[in-house]
Amino acid sequence: MSTVTTTSTSLETGSRNRGPGTRHTASRPVPFTRLVHVELRKIVDTRAGLWMLIVIAAVAALAVGVLLFTGAPEELTFGTFLGIIGLPLVLLLPILGIMAATSEWSQRTGLLTFTLEPRRGRVVAAKLVAGILLGLVLIAVAMAAAALANVIGMTARDGAGSWAVPAGVVIGLVTGLTIFVLQGFGFGFLLLNTPAAIVASLVLSTAWTIASSMSQRLNEIAVWLDLNRVVEPLFSGRMAGSDWAHLATGAGFWVVLPLAIGTWRVLTREIK
Amino acid sequence: MITVENLTKRYGRFTAVDDISFTVRPGSVVGFLGPNGAGKSTAMRMMTGLTPPTSGGATILGQTYRSIPNPGSRVGVMLDAAAQHPGRTGREVLRLTGIQLGVPRSRVEEVLHLVGLTDDEASRRVRNYSLGMRQRLGLASALMGDPEVLILDEPANGLDPQGIHWMRGLLRGFADRGGTVLLSSHLLHEVQVIADELVIIGRGRLVAQGAKEDLLARGGVTARSLDDRALVAAAGASGVTATETAGGVVLDTDAATVGRLALEAGVVLTHLTSGETAGLEEIYLALTSADDREGAAA
Image 1 (cartoon, rainbow over the protein chains, first blue to last red):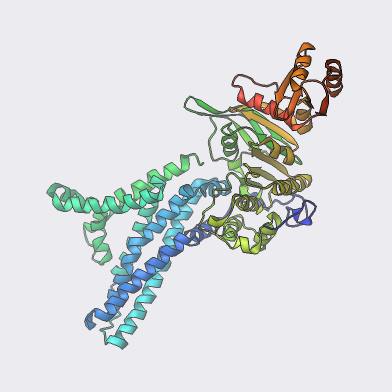
Image 2 (tube, rainbow over the protein chains, first blue to last red):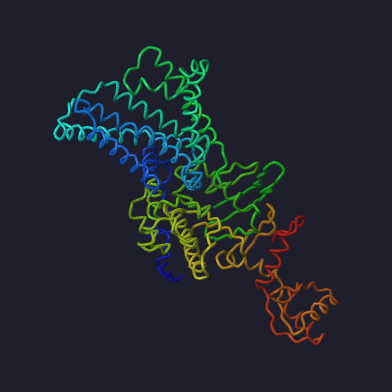
């Protein structure tokens, strides 16, 4: 640490050579776009966040590589590649949402976050928007990567190379990813503890899927309340009829409900 | 300007902060002094809207903290230097604050220079920071928005003596240019170096407040002698309150009286001062350890 003597001119705390309190550009609230910018940056600027993105990219690259070398040529289409890249995205991006929600408590950065913006609802909203934006950006990257893989497949393996992707699949990917990211935030805000929220969001829904496959009565309920099941037609682009109602109840229970309770907790909780 | 009025926080049957009132005027550096668990941090969290008070309240620059638009640009707050994400670099922490406040990017380098963090240190992750470096980073973050008021919880904790003097210079300069500073500490000597005025709390209650000199004067006279016990006895016989401490005998009177007492008792004095730390330390300990004593505020 450099030595700073008490007589040094570097003691000036004001940046513009005048006393504190002479500037009043501060009377406007922080624009929401700036909050989103900060929250987006906070998701990816930590070592953990960065590694999460690297892991997502690595898993996707691995899956694409395996498919490229071992898949049958007729399988090598843009749609297949997009589907295989989308999988780690859907599995791991919610964890970024969880970390974004819980780090304010587990790392206690909330002390700073909520003093810089005491209107906590705006912080929660900015986090959600940032998470969804990141999801959209990653889907765009996934599409570019899938296109690249498709070109490689055509040239190197004489793959089918079809570019046809039903619009429903893309919409499904966007909607599905948004649902899972929001679920991550919901569990994060609800539990305010990173490992607990990760375990709860992964284990609970999986346990529910397993349990419902063993019991007829649970199975009937699961049609409406098993998140993994209700998003299935969404990802395959086959949403029809009652699928939407199933999606609404499933997402309501696993996403909207934890998000609502979690937000209420954040708004009312004492921040230490 | 910080105004705290009848601020109270109860957790169930436990009262963490009990009816505290004081003001911090522009141009002054006020030390909020109290032992661990006295309620300093809780009070500061209530001032900054993180903890809802049970009753009473605080205003900063004439309004509640929560109603200040973009509060970070008017009030610099550091509530816990350790509360930083270990995976971010120091510079990144300041960048985030800067983006939110809407200050130019160059401000990051300005405040880094201001708090004495080098380029290399700023590029390291907070995980590898010492407590002293975290304090400097927290202070840098509080200064990012070029605020009028600073609220700092234990800012000198983890700083070496040189660092504490450096902080005094920084905060003194800030106050001299019209700024308002409230800082907390559980160590008297820290606050003595940095602050001009003291607000002392113990067990959630305000026990003394006033200018440092006035409180120091209340510390009486500190004497050391070749026979402290005899001195205490002589003082007792003359009705002067005297206490033996590690730093010598603290007597609740003036230096001349002590000299005369020693002369009459035939005790050789080796040291005689008024307004010394030992005295204030004694008051501080007495005031903050006793449950039932609400010291008459100066």
